[in-house]
Picture 1 (cartoon, rainbow, N blue to C red):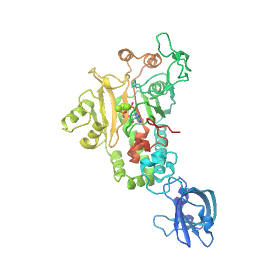
Picture 2 (cartoon, rainbow, N blue to C red):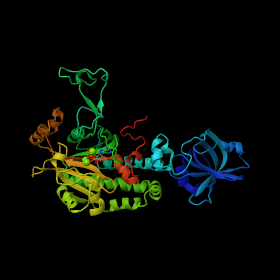
Picture 3 (tube, helix red, strand yellow):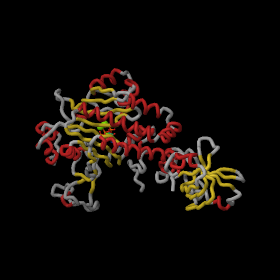
Picture 4 (cartoon, rainbow, N blue to C red):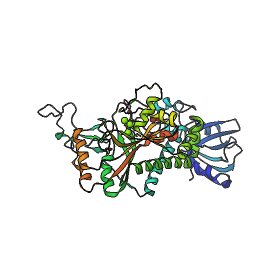
Length: 459
Ligand code: ATP
Ligand code: MG
Ligand code: MG
Ligand code: MG
């Protein structure tokens, strides 16, 4: 059995063949002599036209094929006169698996994205979400291919963890304690020694710390898995459950890290442009007329590399009124990041050497004692798409930072520095932010099949 994609790709060279196609009815139209059904099976954005000659099919036969119904058609593949399609199928046999009754929510064309978010369980059947989800798949595949071809190993870090990588306190707790009868110790604190793991466990916010153990054993590794953050961010760029790609490289300094990040992201976008041309064109034509140009521009131009201190100076001197004031030491908000990228440089920017206070404990301290070897990759429309750094490899310096911040339970992590420490670097790319950029969608909730965000976990 051929998919709609295969039938359309093979095209008229296979005219005359008898084909079996299965899928869902997108639309039906016609007159009393002939009816046309647009059939889609999810394999491509394009529909296959099925022609029903009403001298061979009765009204009753066709009553069952409403929008959303699932059917099986056998018929002859013929060259098509219709614009935009090379072949169509002259139906001979029809089998209806399931008729969709009149309350099918996706009857009309052009539903709003807000409406579709409320029907998240059905929206993959729309053109828009079909396109987004196929692009999402292609990007996931490109990511594995990129790293595999470069000799990186896919390293699996745990989803349930006892450490807080970013120290941002945005972890979801994993517990089996009875919430109505929590065991307390003498001081009145919850006694986690009675919990399932014998201590407080959480869902991971990042696989990096464990990834560093992989890199200091296998050399080059990457993780690619779900991460969870209980931050109450109702923004178009944050999810509570999102996927992250985190390469970690032994013997890489910060400049190598930047080179890899830039090459990697360009590779992924190029892969999507080549392998998802129809889907990207659909999104370009329907939602974002500059999408394809923007994608090509990013791939074809060098990213700007600039220290945070200079970036802040540009923002201060811009004369622009930002919602959040900007000064040296502040963590940049997406409005600042987008100003640098979209208005000042008009190119993606890699901002480096951030103040140590606004970055995580593990980043390598610069000689100035104030900044760390951090790098954030900033993109048009998105702001931060990647956060990375060279890691502090010096045992004493790292131990001092851990003590300053009052972190505990890090002995396992410190062993990477204690036993044969090496310079190493890595970064985290938020997968949905990449999908957001490549699809041109506006809201991160629209690039994952089942979005999780505050007050939204329906099934
Ligand atoms: P932001 O400043 O946008 O909140 P962050 O600095 O907190 O991001 P990092 O801890 O650096 O994020 O995580 C690495 C990457 O993961 C980010 O660059 C971003 O692409 C992605 N990311 C972070 N938080 C989220 C989230 N809540 N939803 C989706 N992607 C996220
Ligand atoms: Mg954040
Ligand atoms: Mg950030
Ligand atoms: Mg970051």
